[in-house]
Amino acid sequence: MDAGFTPSEALRAATWNPALFLGLSDSLGTIEAGKIANLVLLDADPLQDIRNTKRIATVLSEGSVFERKALDNLVAKASSTASSKAIH
Image (tube, rainbow, N blue to C red; front, top):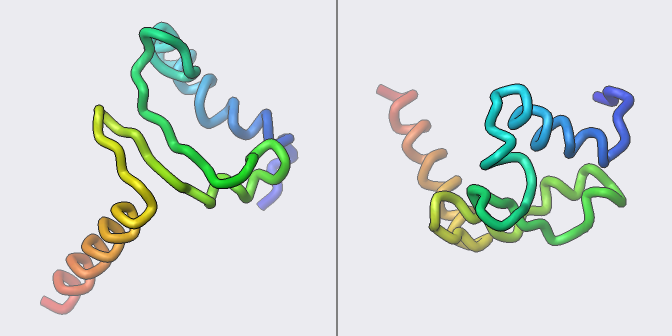
């Protein structure tokens, strides 16, 4: 669905704007020294094509680093768990 945003506006709406709205812009929403470092690293520039946000290479979350293979394993495990619970 096209919301009429440029890629830059869409990224801002997903990062900076929520931090600002929640009053957490001092610790979230941008990449700066002293801020919480939860990041998604991509294989391609989302400013060139917003669909590149799906090309996740690495996730840094709460001090842990998850490379692509680890992310794929987490998704497979979650899918397996969800499937086994749906059967019962």
